[in-house]
Length: 185
Image (cartoon, rainbow, N blue to C red; front, side, top):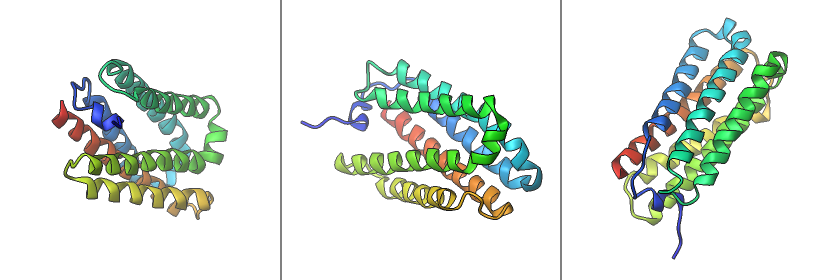
């Protein structure tokens, strides 16, 4: 019998709202970036440092709080620790984050989007409805992350806009996934 993260979430899921909060932070960060494009890039390093640190902390807490109920919880823990590491790097040296921010965002969104596609396919295997919309969110995230990774110096304003779109897409996924977790709880 195959086991998966989603199959084990049918048991009690505690603290599903942390994933919801992570999604809200992603969307808020994306809206802020889109609404202040000229000053956003300079302040973006601070915002991303704090966002990744907070998101990483929430994901680590979620993984640890649910480690008895979920098989494969270690992957969620690793992802949370990865976000903490990225946040720490960005906070330590803002000049590095300004220079390489599109690459950081591109890889994080790519990783989250691939996870979204995997969860979507896992849901389909268990006959859980809503697979198509989750799959399309993952594909959309992969598309936006490749744009960021393909050309990090993608013409000033458009880089800020693509970054905002990628963050909002990641946020929508997190919110959608948290709602699914709540329904399973």
